[in-house]
Image (cartoon, protein in one colour):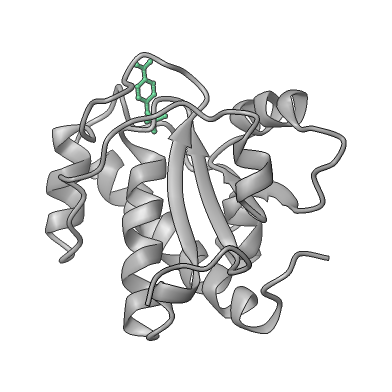
Length: 165
Ligand code: 4NP
């Protein structure tokens, strides 16, 4: 069974689509698989920038995720497009800069939820996943810590509210 047209769609968005958003895609898919509902959710990621289109995730993101049993090596970068607002119900930005870019692209017909991923885990006390691109392995681990917490909360939310309100 594949993802059907009316299944909820979740799109994670960062700047390059090689560090944070592919990490979120992989983490969220692993959680959905564990919950047995991955086939009923369309899950993807994209970047607001186009520098890394067609490229695999950053090797540091792949290594950090692999340490936690999550495989990202098959993913390829792509840029977010206006069509994504028709395909996805939940569009979750990693930081406010990317959220602003998405808001500027958002068609008036969009009825979904556009917001920050970390808003699903307010107990973290931070609302942005920091860009690890200029950082080191510990920054990539921190990204994973934040994304794991928020993705678990997002999945719980989606199981109760598959359609954004
Ligand atoms: P990401 O990290 O947005 O988490 O994928 C970045 C990757 C690349 C660049 C910036 C951020 N870049 O400027 O190339």
